[in-house]
Image 1 (spheres, rainbow, N blue to C red):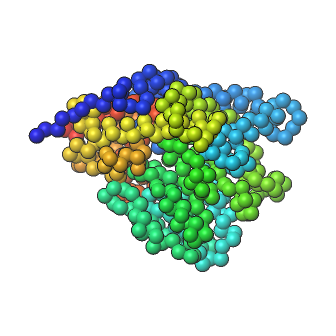
Image 2 (cartoon, helix red, strand yellow):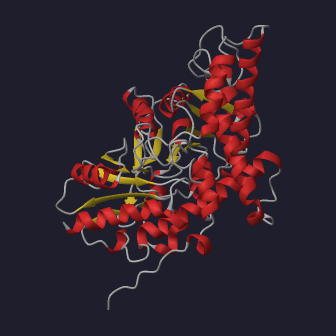
Length: 443
């Protein structure tokens, strides 16, 4: 019998209703159309999200009003100092970190992880190993491979995947972690497959052998809440430009570790964290921008707080607002995931498209284990042709590449097409994508 497609009712079934979605999209100046005026659906968020207006305005204003270097007595300099501190406090609240002094800023997640690997490498003998995974971004691979190349460690080990569902093989992980393991470094979520890592289970394995537990939250940050104290990670990194802000990244580190490890350091810089971990003068506008993102999330929390009146009572103040907002975003991501996998109205989802080969978790009963990020290929149609046809005819912005991830090579392909959705994307945009893929598949 033919499958009956059910329309997913935005008003009745989804955590964000239509008026709220309009409000969210109003917060992002280019949510509906790009700078050229072309209307489009932006699904390339995993490579770099759109910037929320609050962040862009704060960044620009700070660039003008607080353009001076820090540490002086005059207004522009004091303004720069205050802006940087407020940005650190905002990130600390976002992550539920104990203090702004545990927040280190850097050019990118890659640079911060290289800096971290160098600092950890200073205390190694060459006999140790690092364990990471087969769905990592190379930002969380190359810094550890560099330790192997320099013979600071013996080997980098890679946890394999359950290939059919794109999840980590935890049994394999247990065989890799041993008394020589110094670092367990894992993505909170795969930037290609969307799979979320079981961080608490992995943390326990790292703790059992007294290894550092390092979390790459670059892809996860835009999709769900982070509590570094609950995760009990030693270090965690995320990037602003994949989190509705400007370029630049942030590293959380446990304060005692930031104090005892020896990072690269400019001689005259302060001998205390976070300053001794940071290279050169800070960009105050980057801190203003991330504060703008936090302000957006607080606004969002105010719109949906009634849905969480009895939840998240372990938090208070701005940290609770940020957890409310990110909990709502996470639930909305599951709503979008259901539509893209299962279809909407008479449109088939990716699961019903015969020419679509989908990688990663496909089980509709396990949506809590993934984010709304989907990697696929179309039978007999080159990836780039699919991407170009989606853009030309349907105004859908996405790409096909390797995404600096180990995932394509693990699946023995050079590229994959990726759809990466965030909270300003709508069911109507997803329906447009399904329509385009369905028509391309029938052509």
